[in-house]
Image 1 (tube, one colour):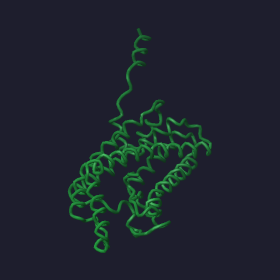
Image 2 (tube, rainbow, N blue to C red; image 1 turned 90 degrees about the vertical axis):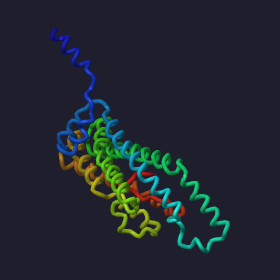
Image 3 (cartoon, rainbow, N blue to C red; image 1 turned 135 degrees about the vertical axis):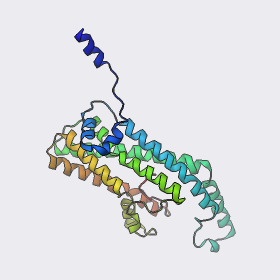
Length: 261
């Protein structure tokens, strides 16, 4: 009978991870310890949490973007000096940008894909750095702690949802990007892209990542902290590349802080 009970317990489905979301901020060390202890993938819950909030943020921002387009708020300063044909082409392009595809579909897809790609890149970089430092932590567990450390980014999207909803204004200067001139190009544009990701949510992400890495890596605390900070810094440098590319191709936006690549 005892063996039958043990077999039944072994066959019980894994408990849900939703309760870990609030616990992550109340007891971060304990919760990240639970994440690190899992031998199966548990990263789907935090990623879906972030994706849902990305969708909400896009839904509240879309009508404001459309209103700005209709009011001509995005007209270039020298628009009056353009030829009639150039003005017409620009206005037609602006009208197309007001379609549901540009207002909803593309921002949602790019936002979701951006966070997903971020999770994969960050997990790969952290795995490589920890391995070179001497850790033998499996890639699956590192992917788990990266995904759960990203939960503060969901809060970022939630705050964005409320700020845009109440103020009826878009967030134009995320993070510390307002420290750099918006018209800057070259390396300064790259620096602006990097600064756009640095905010309280990024710091929370790094903090949770450090906690998780310490528990999963098997390294001494100092080595684990150093390796994790190096990995996070490398990732931050990579995040600035879209802004640099955008400046080289005619000022395409790379505002940061939304992972809308």
